[in-house]
Image 1 (tube, rainbow, N blue to C red):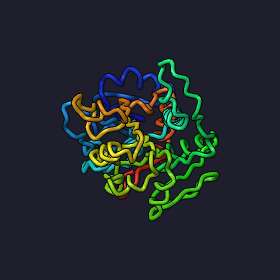
Image 2 (image 1 turned 60 degrees about the horizontal axis):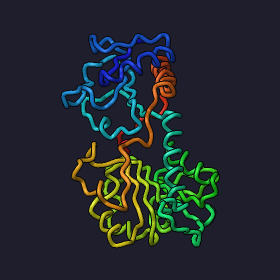
Image 3 (image 1 turned 180 degrees about the horizontal axis):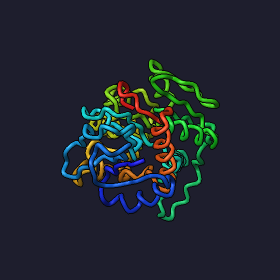
Length: 306
């Protein structure tokens, strides 16, 4: 099989060896007649001149495999007529679990209270995890893994998704019950995709549903939160802190107020990364499925946008 590697040149040196090791029968190339390729392996940012990728010439391709978990920059492309699959990488999921668990524990334990200034502050021990409520918005591959990990640590976890699809061991609320999930969130973790239904989801009205002093941890999508409404909720004391890993504009401009706000922690989109070593077998499996005409893994529903 032949696959076209449609990603920035800087990714070639790490991805090409991993893909060839996972799929020895693969003929992987960065150039050639588009009509001669069976699949496209794609990452946003290609071509590098800012033009949208033109998938139309890849008339033989049976698959466009994204190297990213998010597909909001790919799915709307009008030239994309091939099946599109998003990346679900076990390494990416583990990275997201570690990020969310780490920041949830930091919020829960109040680690930032202990300034190294010689004062002995032992009058306010943290509660146990069973006394802390955490809500996870988005119960897909990443959100489900995060919810499971936090529940295993003893937190009282509520999940929410548009579908409300059940998950063993986690109470999952559905579409109309978003207000209930927010009302239970001493700590809110947001892992929703970027779709028309989720953009600006957390506006002033919904932020007001969170318990007094709640934390927000957002490694999902920067479009989920109305920035000015978040700043107002923090400034009023309604919310205690926000940990933000994703933004409407990336890199986050140096003059953006998030950088200097004392109740916001900015991390530079590092919560989870697709790692070639763990992701290449996922790509290989989908390539083989495409060639054999079998159902693809993690195929995107274009109507829903993920």
